[in-house]
Image 1: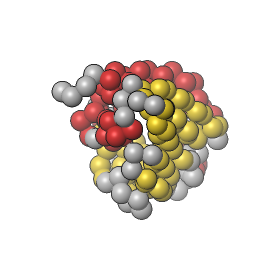
Image 2: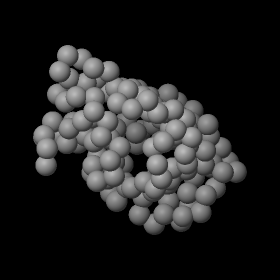
Image 3: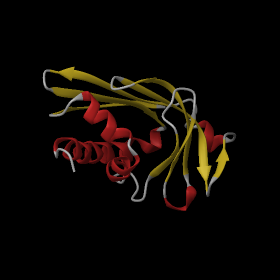
Image 4: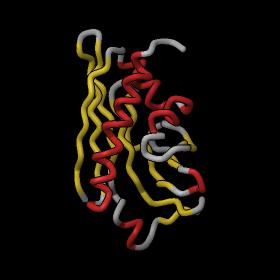
Length: 148
């Protein structure tokens, strides 16, 4: 498992960045950099189960490990989704478990610093190194565009 970290400064409040990260309509836009058609099912409430899906029902099953609104969100991956079916056992699922994806938002004057820390299997590092900067650039554009 490899640990990756990405940081970006947004000319927006922590509330705007948080809401843009985790509201379904804007999540679909920035997460589309990983897989066009990305979505989620579930609630961001601490302790709840989430399903992060691409077209065809494949993706990852997770639990919200910690949620401190506008400050910190920790996602713990617990398995994979294969055509909509949860897979929590076996070699492929074990490569992702127990991986975390953490979002830390820190006020910086009138701006917000976002740091994303995540654990990924080694064979996904190159993909993430390509996709995360594009996703964060798209997220930054959404956050700084102002109200729709």
